[in-house]
Image (tube, rainbow, N blue to C red; front, side, top):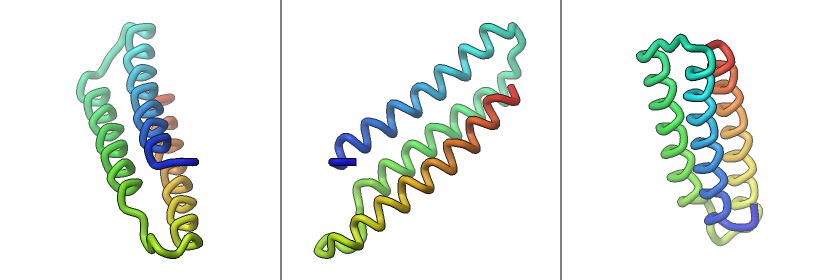
Length: 92
């Protein structure tokens, strides 16, 4: 990512798209377990908050290699968590 602002916008956009997908699937299927849906939405929002906070505080501000490694790890962690949530959404 070129900037923290763009990274945070991307994180928020993907989170909102995941939540939209959850509600769309519930509307299209006609069956909705409110507790499961609500817990999944809360999990997505917690994930969003966690990664936005992590994006604000990189390690080693003076060393560009440390900052690059930090954001690479942040992005890799985010991809793993997002794929786990997508698997949960598909099971709805």
